[in-house]
Length: 193
Figure 1 (cartoon, helix red, strand yellow):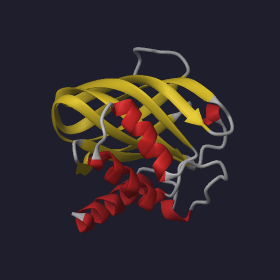
Figure 2 (cartoon, helix red, strand yellow; figure 1 turned 90 degrees about the vertical axis):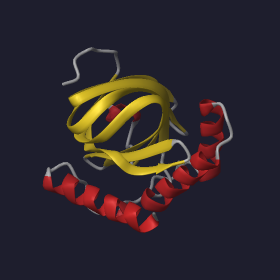
Figure 3 (cartoon, helix red, strand yellow; figure 1 turned 45 degrees about the vertical axis):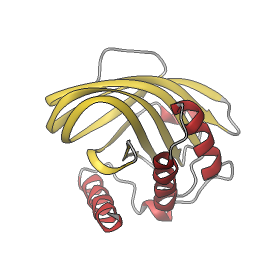
């Protein structure tokens, strides 16, 4: 499983670079001083998702081993649906140690071998965020079975030097993989583009 995860992450990084939205070697990026430890994230995740889950702790540890310690995280809810082309809408709060909290909304299209719908509680780990307003942009990547354990799924999205890692636990049935992006905005909108 770990070998498969590394292969998927390497493929994801290559695709991001080929599409011009990659950020270079993610592991080599420097971390800002006000970061979150894995224990902080697991505690916030357990409180948010409403249950103690070994799967959540494992998936957060996997994210930290790949990208280091985030300097922010988002807790929110989202809904998505797809039949080849899909849409995703969500809302939540961005938490940072030194710049306060910020309400955020996200939406985005996807295209791929994908069908179904889901509603999810989402925790997004945010890396290399220079200021809170820098989250208001498009983050592209590949969604699907990048990593899945204990009822939680994890993917990675990148823009400029910022990486967002959504961790989802939801209800519904959605099968497949797709390429797309999430656009973060300060106000809700129905326009995913």
